[in-house]
Image (cartoon, rainbow, N blue to C red; front, side, top):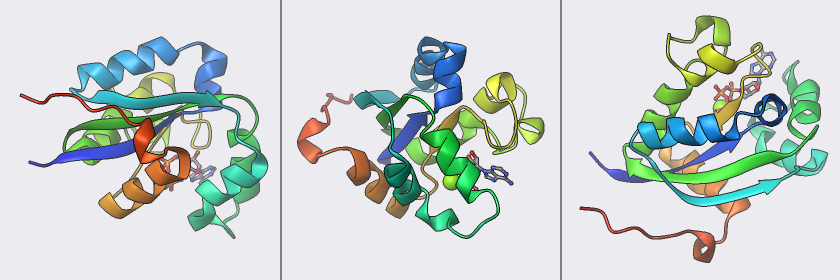
Length: 144
Ligand code: ATP
Ligand code: MG
């Protein structure tokens, strides 16, 4: 087990649905702590940079439009195995394929409008956290 940080985004469709509170509760129920949090509306340029790995894919332009369509909440989460733990809590990319009880199963609309983002590995978590937060922005908890 390792204490990790990961980047989570509550995407614009979740804010349209009014489920910020529900999703923060899912974070806490998963045993993760929110150590950084801000609301913002991504510019198309910021969304493009964030999802640069998907540049050239058929869904890229629509993804950038969706992610910059309204405000989102960007969070840094911390906990034991936070990266996998948050991905498991979100469920599969396509809500139709997501397991019962996961966020995307419960609230996702389709493979694009799937409510949340989570970093997928240690290196992407590090760079994605740095894309939105200065290290001084993050809180430090006492872990027992
Ligand atoms: P995220 O990176 O947002 O946590 P993910 O890692 O589960 O999601 P990725 O393959 O990285 O999935 O895709 C990034 C995002 O692009 C997805 O969350 C979704 O919003 C969108 N997306 C992925 N695949 C498709 C697709 N086939 N059609 C439309 N949109 C897609
Ligand atoms: Mg991804």
